[in-house]
Image 1 (cartoon, helix red, strand yellow):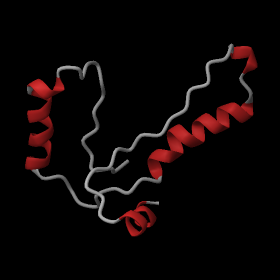
Image 2: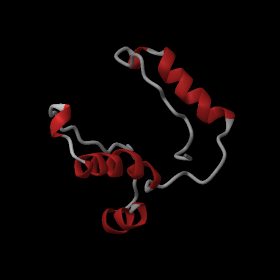
Image 3: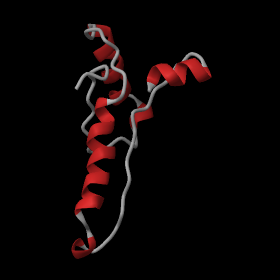
Image 4: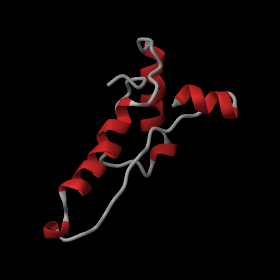
Length: 88
């Protein structure tokens, strides 16, 4: 998926791995089909994104920490932030 996007659109400078759907229904109306659709998008989508294919360097982690302690992260609250370069 990543290679195809890069071929069609050129160099990718920022990649946000974000896929999700939300169907608000009473539990009794949820079906196996809806569960499978949710699972495919939320869980399997993660595995289809391209990892950086290298181990993190201390500077990679330091940049994230610098962001989190700085003023630009003021609205980031209660999140689990995986700093993994896309490795799952």
